[in-house]
Image (cartoon, rainbow, N blue to C red; front, side, top):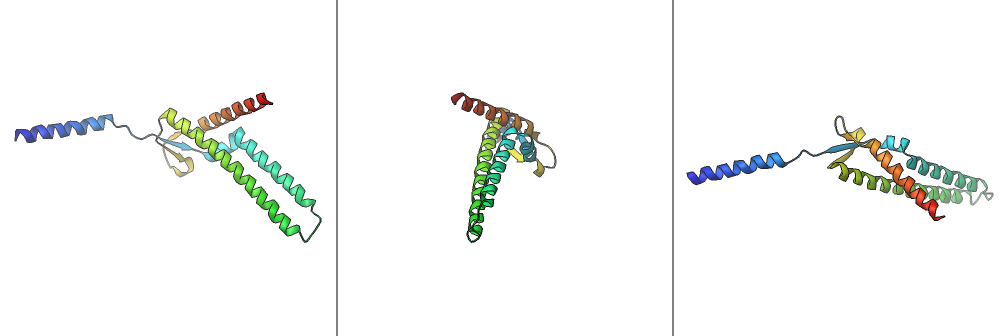
Length: 147
């Protein structure tokens, strides 16, 4: 009987200690639309895509052979889509790196899109925009130094 009481006391102690040491998960939210609208890096990539589109449109409009017209249009469109995908992938990778830095710094367990969350969560949108633009500015500066 004494063994059962001691065992029960030990189990209760472990349960209480485990409850005291565990922390609730930290959840953050991110408004990606705001990041796209406010980040200089995102705007620079959008401008780059617009310039590519304008160049391709100009190239297409100079096409004179009507038989080749449809094939050329398809090639131009595919080239545009390829560049769009490349720029989106590049931006997504940059955002992912910065989110990971914020996550580690703020001890965050989960990051969700803000439009998917009804209530709660630490909003890291502003921090992401600042760090993303800061990283980009540093890279731009080092690229200019090399030239």
